[in-house]
Amino acid sequence: MKIIFYVSLLLPGVHSFAQSSHQQQAQGAKPGLWINGINCKIGHFTQSCTPKTCDSITLFPGDTIRFCTDADVDLASDTVYYMQWNFSGSNNYPSPVMNYAPVPTPVCYDAVYTNPGHYTIDVFYNGWLTAYPDRDCYSFGPSHWIVEVTVMPGANSVQEQGGENAFSITMDPANNALLVKTDGAGVMEFYSGLGTKEYSMQVNEGANFISTAGFADGIYFCRVTSGEKTLVKKMVIMK
Image (tube, rainbow, N blue to C red; front, side):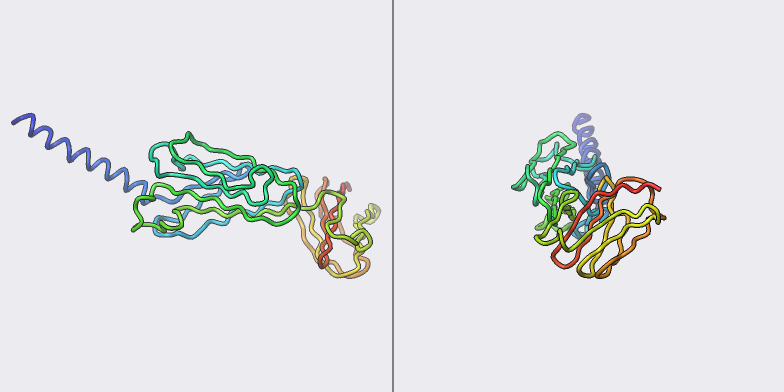
C-alpha cells in the first residue's frame, strides 16, 4: 500500500511538470531567423498567424545571403517539426528545401544570387504548436518569414537596351558633385559597397548636379532608373 500511495503521488507531479513546460512553449513569442547576421524575430504570440516581413536586402550579382535558424527553432525532439525554405531566384536552391526533425540546429543555408531582378523569399517553421490547431493558424504553419530581395545589375552595367545613350554619370570633384544626365525623369539611388541604400533622390530630364558634400567618403554604387532603363555605376567619392 505504501508503494501504491507513493506512485499515485509521483504521477500527478510529473504530469503537472510536463503541462507547465508545454504551456511555457505554447504561450511564448514565436521564433526568429538570422539573415546575414541580423536577427528577424516574429514576436507575435500564439493566436497570431501574421507573417513577419524582415528587412529587405539589396545584392549585386554573385552575392550570397546567409540564413540560419535561431536558438528557439527546435527540430530535434518531435518528428512533426519542419522547416521549409523557398529561396526564390537563387542559383543554388532552385526548388524549396525541407528540413524534417530530428535535425541538429542551427540549420544554415547560403543562397547565391546572380540574376538581376526582384525576388521574394519565404521561410516556414511548423513549430511547437503544430499539434494544437485550436491555438494557432495551423493550416498555414505557425511561423512564416518574408524577405524581399533586389539583385541589381552589375557595376558599370546597363539593365535595358539603349541605356548607354539614356544616362551618363560623371564626377565633378571641384564642386563636390556628380553630373547626372538622363533622357527622362527618374530616381537616383546610392548604395554602399555592402549593398545598403544610403541616399535616394529624384532626377529630372537633362542635366542634374547632385551634391556629395554630405556624403561619407567611400565606394558607392549609383543606380539611375527612368522608365524601363536602369544604369548602375561604381563611384569613389573622396573629398
